[in-house]
Image (cartoon, rainbow, N blue to C red):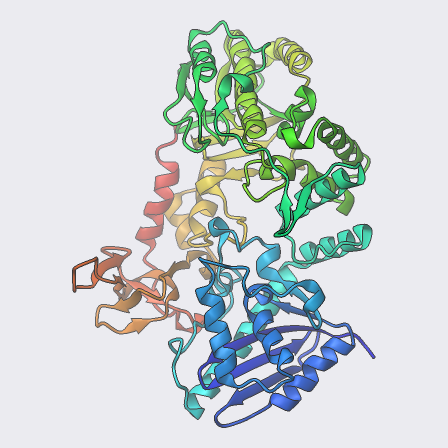
Length: 614
């Protein structure tokens, strides 16, 4: 029998359960309902058994965390589960998220067919990246953004079930569109699964990296887990305190009094917690404030534009694979994994170099190299050893500070930025040979390798927001922070006309207002607001708006307010204006985008990114 691949979604209410499945690459859509008015239990069970018996695959937005366990309950009951039973299961899953999120987990071996979870592979299960399907509908620029039409727990009548069915079909279409966006990620995981004979299909990138490293360690005979009556536990190095002097390599040296003060400060610290330990740790060098933090060293000019010409150049130098390279060069390792860890690290980096960038093998080894450091401060990981983390973090910052100190000895050189793993300078072209000599000496001393590029132009608002144009015209312009518009899926894709126009203003000197008013894509003017289910979104008349809402700032529109529950011991709901002082056009259905755009609002936002630069 032919294997199938379907995209599916479920909806659960006390008296209605829906499952909609769409066969991939076709228009064939199945709708199954179990309610007070219709019972498709037998046909649904037969369909799911077909997926099981053919070894088929089902894609879902959150199939591992929600839809899959509900479906598994239905299958375990031989297709005899009522809508109420499945609703109770769904509520139990939702209520367990904070206390025991694994209590409803269904292991791979217990699944009736393969699940591929778009939520997991994009790491949306990380709180910092949490993203809803509604938010993705906005980011994917769908014509219609539909929110759940009825409150959870509603007893539905036949007409409401029809509405819910259309909503579920819409969600399946949105999930299928997102699946297409994720095809490179899916194909990458398929290649890894075939190569390693390990199921990587629902792994986020960081989990892929740490898993590959773990497999290589175990292959080399390194014990990663301890086994006992309570099952498997990761081996770790727990430390009651950290003496940060152990994180400063003995060969680190500064002539500059400010950098030396920071170095000595590190040597004096004994900490019990890594978070916040570097708060307010700064050094003022060369007219810049260098900030030391757990995320790396940061410094930047603000509100300046640099142009390369015949006399001056913009030179950027980054450490290649900084964190893995520091660990390997200095033979840092989590104590419980021993020196074999460094050997495996070297092997992984060497293996990666054998494959071209863009190949699955290169990507896999890159993830493995970066994943070990990323997991070294994770209390659930086999790599956990906070001293290993701090050795790399502190050592790396001090090494870059050494490079900065030496570069500042070059007459006419200015530091534009120092940012985690590299330094960008504006300097006389005549000084390039001297700068390269300093860099080579630094590489010899640190055993790290620098990668160099030239920019033709940089527009820097601050350390987190800038545009850099490569001198090599084959490379795409680098954008960071408020100037980014090619965003990751977990980021807010609102108001993209602003960074797009700002870039043209800064790089091409186009007029702001004329460019905004002639911008051709209305979707770039759209903004998104999302309020939790405990809050409400209403207009000036108190009419409710769906909780995930698409709008643009418009002339003659309506005023939106976010209504939040009363504070403790209070009774009045709190009201906050959305786009205070402006009116908006709500257009969750893009056909409702009929009002004139308030161009003044968008011009003002572009000016915030451009007028201050000089």
